[in-house]
Every structure is written in C-alpha cells, then in structure tokens.
Amino acid sequence: MGFETFFSIIIMFMFLGLAIGGFIALALYFLPIIIAAARKHNQILPITLITIFLGWTFLGWLVATLWSLSPDVQTNPPETKEN
Image 1 (spheres, one colour):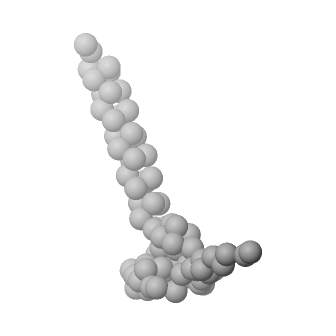
Image 2: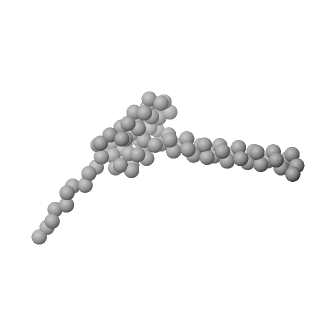
Image 3: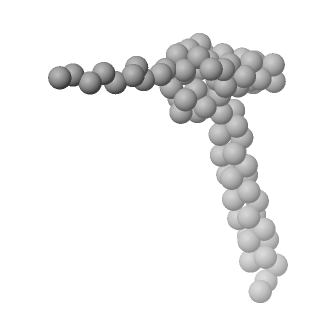
C-alpha cells in the first residue's frame, strides 16, 4: 500500500466525519422545530421563526427549545358516543 493510497483513505474518512458532523449539527440546530412538530405544539410557527432567525445564538436556540417543551400542545377532545 503506497503513501498515496493511505493518504486518500485518510481524506475519505475526514470527509465522512465532516458529513456526519454536519448532519448532527443541523439536527441539533433544528431540534426545537422537530420537538414542536412531534408534540403538535400550538405555537409551532413562532418557534420555527425564532429557531431559523435567532437559533444561531445560543440564547435564541435555548428559548426556542424550552418553548417547544412547554405544555401548550394540541389535545384531542374527548370522544362522545352518539346513539
């Protein structure tokens, strides 16, 4: 195995690591939106806007994440039995 082959393998793993790291970073950046959508939050639009425009600051991301965890979610009304 030559030096060029070894070097190309190292470069390949570096790019793979960057791709996986980038995917994880994007998932963490959009975590408040993912949480709000999964919980069917009533305020998903403001959470999304705060995440997109202020999520790059830690404070904006923290506010959006805590807001997405708040109990303001859609609830299904109790089913009524019709005769």
